[in-house]
Amino acid sequence: MLNLESIKKAQKNINKVVTKTPFAYAPVLSQMIGNEIYLKKENLQHTGSFKLRGAFNKIATLSEEEKSKGVIAASAGNHAQGVAYSASYFDIPSTIVMPEATPMTKVSGVKSHGGEVVLAGNNYDEAYAEAVKLSDEKSLTFIHPFADYKVMAGQGTIALEMLEEQPDLEVIIVPIGGGGLISGIATAAKAINPKIKIIGVVSSGAPAMYNSYKSGIIQDSTSVKTIADGIAVRDSNPMTFEIIKDIVDDIVTVNDEEIATAILYLMEKQKIVVEGAGAVGIAALMHHKLKFNSPKKIGVVVSGGNIDVTMVNIIIEKGLIKSNRKMKLIVTLIDKPGSLMKLTEILKDVKANIVQVGYDRTDINLSFGDANVSVALETRGAEHQEEIKKALYKNGFRFVIE
Image 1: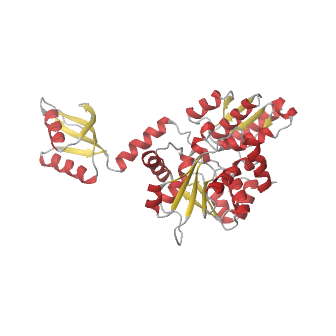
Image 2: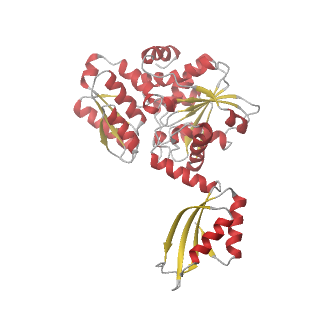
Image 3: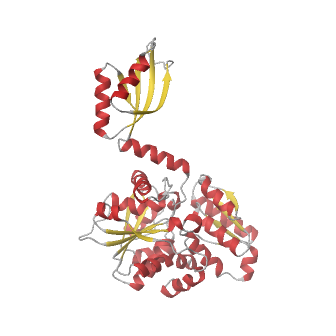
């Protein structure tokens, strides 16, 4: 069973391999939110995620016969790397079934730790079905990413570390996918301090556990769609649900826009790279999903940092536009010498930095003799953008904002 004793045993099992990650005060975020906030940076864990804790504890407790057969797991990426790393430590073979849309950084991470990767299915649940089938066919020991008491106990060691450093924590905020992380953390934290509040955060694009918690009965989703691929779990698991409904104090949701804002904030202000699942707790705080009667001492689990660089680029670009630090225009010019120079002179005068230019005279909506110039500009906020628009209007330019 899962209890404080089993979690303390797990801590001994994983002690030599798992990093005791920083649990650091976040001054800027604390001031902005009005609470005393600490970040548990599991994005700095070996393999870039907390998942190593549970995977290692599970594999460490297998019999020699089970180890000799090899292990198999299904994962969107972080559990996969944890299993592959742990299997490599014990010198046993590992097979990992991952959804076909898994970011390459996570696929490469598994392979770098010696794991064999099988891509199957559109989400975790479909990859899980394939892994179970392969486990039966090849007599491999299946390492479940969350519905296993040994795995949950490994994840619960995070709470032990947090409360060792900050014993007077009042709230712990935890991402929820399958529910293994919050089950372990809540079990440990509540055993140490029954008054502590445990709050889970799910992506609105993967709401099964949220819906189950709020209704009190298991509810599955028909599909999932979220940038937080680490918590993109379609169905609620009965084992973790029973724990969560009994000891978790609340669950809230955040959407992809809110998650992306939190990822960008953490890069800019906290100087840490975090994946979508790891950012949901910060997103919940930043977008006021949690209400407290008075300032609280809050620990937030930043669960992982394995984000695809393509996604980072998209988040940065959208974030710059959303915060009025970048502006994209399509300006219609008379297609003759000097027209483009006149446009760039105006932009220079209003101190707009041109970072990209495109020229198109073949658009079927253009009049003959005209051309469209697409311009990307670095700007200094909403007032600067208004100044740019007024200057263009004043000089007779026709334009649209992309």
